[in-house]
Amino acid sequence: MEEKIVAMPRIGDKAPEFTAVTTQGPINFPKDYAGQWVILFSHPADFTPVCTSEFMTFATMEDQFAKANCKLVGLSVDGLFSHIAWLRTIKEKIQYKGMKDVEVKFPLIEDITMEVAHKYGMMQPGESATKAVRAVFFIDPKGIIRAVIYYPLSLGRNFDEIYRALIAMQTADAFQVATPADWRPGDEVIVPPAGSCGVAKDRMEAKDPAVTCHDWFFCTKKIDKETVLKTVLKK
Ligand code: BEZ
Image (cartoon, rainbow, N blue to C red; front, side):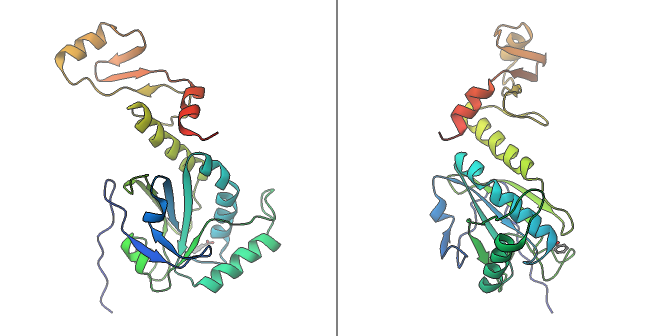
């Protein structure tokens, strides 16, 4: 069979549009999510253990993401009835790491035709011809893809990292800064690089007491945790 070659959506691209049937009714993506962040993520298959652990974890964090103005949308190449049966099993039967009676309230897309999965580069035949890899697309309130993370089938995602990345991008947007390695709210942020020799000189002469420079191109400043959280989280 001829392999379908699809361009993968990249950071900075408009999120590819689609309509789909989900466990929460039909959706028109990304239009229905305008003005909000949305995390579109794929998983390989229903009724599989790693995916079950991921769905339970993500579902228990849904309110936390909602406070950061972010909706969750899942996808696998299974059908709607399989999705419904799996989510019912999770709620009724599965206890895992202190989580039980977990109701997955965010939409799970049925994609038997793999149309959406192909549009988003979630089918990666070197890993599996029939199962989507674990992709995570962060899409901003204007429908632009801002970050993409891919994991193989065997590797369950770190949802704290997904939340950290979301808050870091929102902080970068709100304060016009960048965030260094392992940044968390309350840690120092990176101020934009000096764009002229004059600014580089001022930075090295510590003209702004709020800014600390390790060298002219690497300067940081403090933003309080409370200030970050008050800005990016809804009450
Ligand atoms: C899982 O979710 O457990 C799984 C799915 C596909 C391949 C391997 C593991």
